[in-house]
Amino acid sequence: MAGKTVTNGAAQGKAARSGVDGAARGKAGMGRVDLIGAGPGDPELLTLRALRLLQQADVVVHDRLVSDEVMACVPAHVRRIPVGKAAGFHPVPQDEINALLVELGLAGLTVARLKGGDPTIFGRGGEEFEAVTRAGIPCDYVPGITAAQGAATSARFPLTHRGLATGLRHVTGHRARDAALDLDWASLADPQTTLAVYMGAANMAEIAAQLIRHGMPADLPVLAVSQASTPQEQRLHATLQDIAALLARKPLPAPVLFIVGHVAALAEDGALPQGLCHPEWRLVAHG
Ligand SMILES: C[S@@+](CC[C@H](N)C(=O)[O-])C[C@H]1O[C@@H](n2cnc3c(N)ncnc32)[C@H](O)[C@@H]1O
Image (spheres, protein in one colour):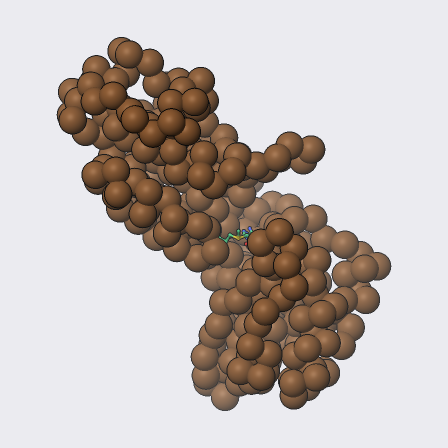
């Protein structure tokens, strides 16, 4: 497949972004794409496999949720292509990201597609996996610590706990193009199941009201965690009935994750525990 001409029109149109020229296409052999979880921010939460692949990559295609500290683990000579949304900029559309990954893989490059948290959880990793494998390019998932795990461990509480939660559900609090939320509220309103609500900041008033309407106790604990596992982490303790008002009064910087359930009462206040996000983390694992 080396030197194969890319026939995907969208991909050809994106040659400037991919930087793939004739020389790169000439590289012997098919490339590969790994969909790698970057975790919630702290580079010490990267898996060893993720770190190795970042250090072996020809190019890293990364999202906005990937922290600077994780990006510091990418060797300086490795090309970086940002495809995430930054303040004031539009994100690269998903079909263009898919085409870019195919373009780079067909060019024989080893591509690290680095995504915040875990690539299989609200990360559109499935669409990228399909596009890349459909093009015949080897592709694997590399799991990452998802935001719910990062938020809970950094506030030192468990997501399930005997007597408090018999299960855990990860749900999205947002739908594409701001469509109305379409969640099965009756099934979600189980106080014995911890709810980890991703992308819920804009819709928290509706989420809380629906959960209460469907039987959740109004005083059920809620923890909002902003920028979990980073030195900028902030936490807001609330209940279902007051979370929206508190957030309106004290908006938290994105990204924010909500943990709804009795276990949230076990969350610690205050600063990160010593040693979790130490100031020297920038020195970790340079290639
Ligand atoms: C598009 S989803 C990506 C989720 C990611 N794939 C994961 O497994 O964590 C983005 C949402 O994840 C949550 N999130 C991701 N990283 C976070 C962090 N460091 N702190 C708090 N929430 C985070 C927020 O709810 C954010 O709106």
